[in-house]
Length: 330
Image 1 (cartoon, rainbow, N blue to C red):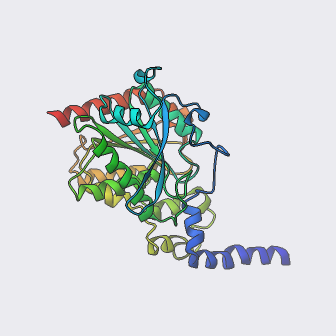
Image 2: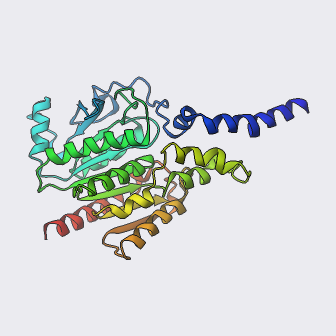
Image 3: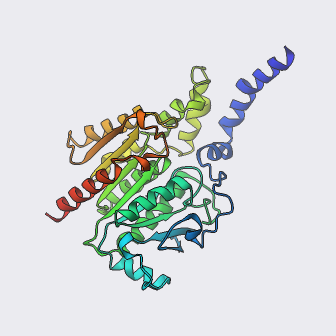
């Protein structure tokens, strides 16, 4: 009985207080960069995770943070006549005749995680260029203190690099997954203030803001009813600028947006994506040319990570790409 009482006091008394005042713990919970899978990835060799026609390279941001990046060629460019050199790959990107997709990943793992590689291969089979990278302190990027502003700054730099590198007639799309949806909407809102936008934005398994995601996360269900929950768990993230307020940022984005979410997502509840969609609809005056949402039935069992396996996804992507590109050139 005494052991149970002590355990209870620790769980509902001491640990919440420690969490409330520990910015380090808050960041570790939000940024699961210590979760590395697959183990011991050789980022210099994308072929080690099954990617063809891919190169590894690095960019150094304005803050002198080294960012690890892969460039993956469209399927039609995979042949032995292309030298496996940085110069050759950069030339192909500069002279690209195919859409370019920049991928921003979620809060755990790195750019080599298996579900991400599946999506890269889908893009590749659709004959798109792919650029994927790791935020600071993820993968083989520089170990630098993590923050919302930090990962957003890294991502903004990479997107600006892509937009400058690619011919202006070639469409560039951003794809954000999970936490990457919060990163990408923040990045595009900042760029919109500079009158810069990609051709379109895909948000896979998004949430509306961190406050709601923390409250609705499965792990929170045991504690959210307690009177201290909001003060202990939610307020510290907000006060420490770990907000990822996509519902605010999305209203500033000018390019068309496609939201994809599975009903059986066990990490980010489907209704949070709906809240984000409705926030956008309200901002865009019910203009469905600006924002679309596709609900993926739970019977497919795709959950949080495997929308890449949705049988309709290739056609959804191709249709959205064609429509946005057509509107851009008219």
